[in-house]
Image 1 (cartoon, rainbow, N blue to C red):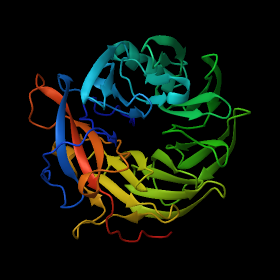
Image 2: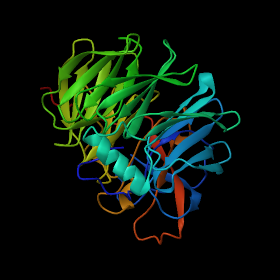
Image 3: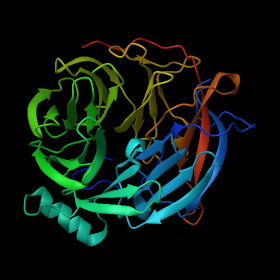
Image 4: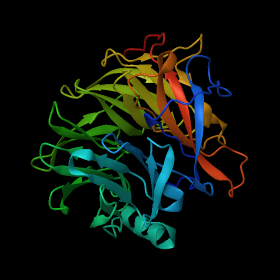
Length: 392
């Protein structure tokens, strides 16, 4: 998530999409979605009360979707095989980042802390008077029991896994650092200063580096995960306040979402330079890639979802459906203006009528807080026309 100064709105309707599930038989085009781009195919209750959710992570081995229910301070475990909530785990105040690592049977959750104590701790941490009370929770995905809760700075957010060095990295957004952990011993290894507020964090196996946008400096921090030092800071011209980040699989290309001017930057990670840019929906936040369909999704808190074809990773092409632009408002746009949030998508490799299936949790506007949150399922066609993006 993105934490602003002054603090951002605390209640934001969540939306994210991750892979698979059975194929419902009744489909309909959602209101406001361009024909041919999104089709609603199901809706599953998530639980009582409307509250913000944040990141999500899918474990293909167990067919579980893990959801950080930020507003409720809980982790939802959703069974995608049965399309039901398996369990809601309490005790994760203001949960933000979440990451399943199936190879280790581990689930990692960023826990900044909530309430007055959490706010005071974050405030003191921002001015350097506290190391913060944020934590990284480590759970066993076999038993769903917590194994450890480790100190993680002022406001832990994004999480990434370095399988080569068996290390976990967490962005401490308001603490201006990336925290490094030993994934085997479940211990904190180091606090790596990024010299500014840090956004999301990602590990790239091709360059063997960890990357994190420094939103207050318009730069991309490059970290050596072996030595735990920041080796360089690459400028990000053409965008303001870079926060969201994701890396193209097998390409050493990064996509950075800048919420200061609603721009997507394409970064050559090895060269450390911006090689392209494109407009995004207002207030972009989280990004996700569907590797099967080669699509990039960029979620905006305004309720829009920008979709790009990344067949050529260096030159993403905004997707166009039936004459509409690549910046679309899929069903979560029914949430209140400036409150929809989306992590977006992975796909099931095949589906009826050339469709690939997505899960999208959302809290529509106008529902009473006592009504159920729901997990809506949408289908996305496997092939769509596209239009070129702008080079810098």
